[in-house]
Length: 216
Image (cartoon, rainbow, N blue to C red; front, side, top):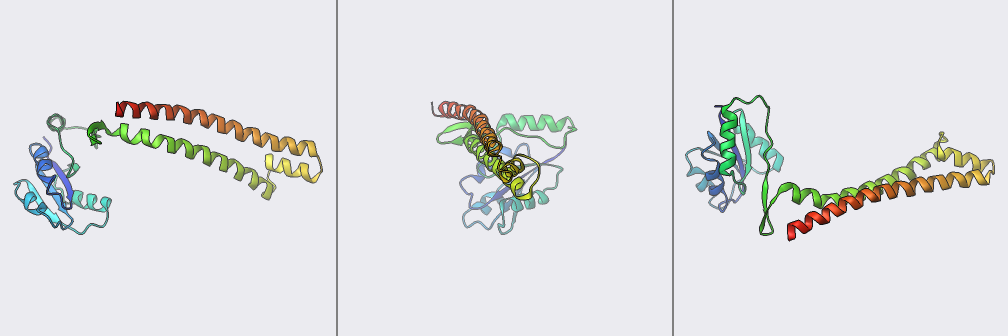
């Protein structure tokens, strides 16, 4: 079986660290704890576990500290945890089984369950529904702006397209053609807004449904 290191970054995690280490102690060959000079009992707790290798470095960013902890690990396989995360017995058993069969994959994704507002929830039900209305609104706004900018650019640069058509009609005093071009732009913008509005309505309906399930 390939060895596995567990990497944990900490700062004042005396309330969480012991349970985190205990949850992964059986599956880990080593546990690297990289601390940002905690002022509580984090170091004392970490050093009380035989498998822990404790180090300290000033915190200069979450990603930087995670990468630094990764560099301290001695095994090819690394499980990166936060101190408030736990490895379930089922996950520990699956890790041992997977690594015991000499996997051909470069890495694995692990589903995460989060304790949020007094209830256990899978991560996707927290993140994706909350983000979907913002994504949909952003698409509607940005598409409208893009259409306006495209027509404006054609007007300024004299390139072929609706903007150029409207400009040429205006210069030639072809009023009907000019207003036809303007109306075409308006209809395109209105249709695009309706289309994205329908998509947004579906996303918001999913969002409300997911929220109702969460709070039921």
